[in-house]
Length: 224
Image 1 (tube, one colour):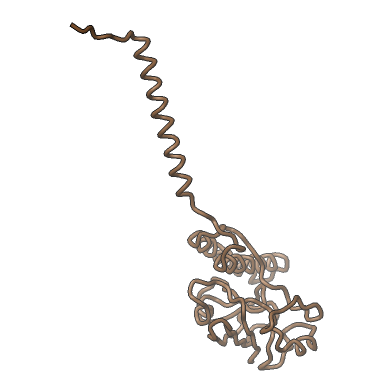
Image 2 (tube, rainbow, N blue to C red; image 1 turned 30 degrees about the vertical axis):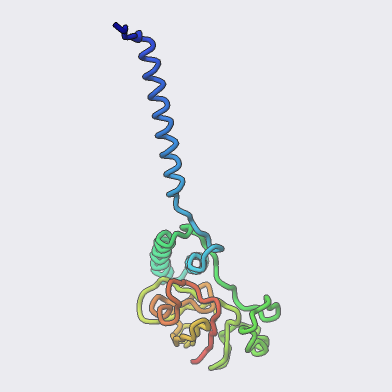
C-alpha cells in the first residue's frame, strides 16, 4: 500500500500565504493595467479647436467680470452674477468636451494697427482704413471692415441674437461672417465684453461650424 504524505500545519500555512500573495499580486497588476487603459485624456486649448474656443469664451467672461469689479456701477452686481453663471456653464461644456476645466484664454486685445501681428492674407483687406482710425473701432464708418484679425467666439448667454464688444457702444450693428462656411449674421451690440465681437448663443449658432466654439477666420463689418 502507498502511504499518503501529510503536511504539517506550518507548511500548510506557508503554502496558503504564498498562494494568496500571488493571487493578490496578479489581481493588483490586472486592475492597474485596466485602470491605466481606461484613464480619460484631457485636452488643452492647444490640442483642440473646441477647447480653444471654450477657453477663449471663458477668458472673455472672466475679463468682463474683472472690469466690472474694477470700475463698478449700479448694474455691475447684476452683470457679474449673470457672467458668473455663464462661466459655470462654459466649465460644464469644457468637462463634457474632454477639455481642461477652468482653462482660460482671453480673445484678441483692442486692435493696434501700428503694430500688426502678421495677419493672414484674407485678413489684410481694410488694413489702410484701420490705420487711419487709431482710436479704435467705435469711429468706423458704416459698412467698413473692423476688428481685423480678431477671432469670434460665444459668450454663453441666451436670448435673441446679439453681441457684446469692447470697441463699439450699445446700439451698434455688426455683421459677422464666418469665412470658413460663408455664413453671416447681423447683430446689435447690447453690452460690453473683453473682445471686439462676442456673440451670444443664438447669434453664434447662425454662423458656427458644427462642434466648433471658435471662428478663426471672421470678417467683421460695422453696418449701423
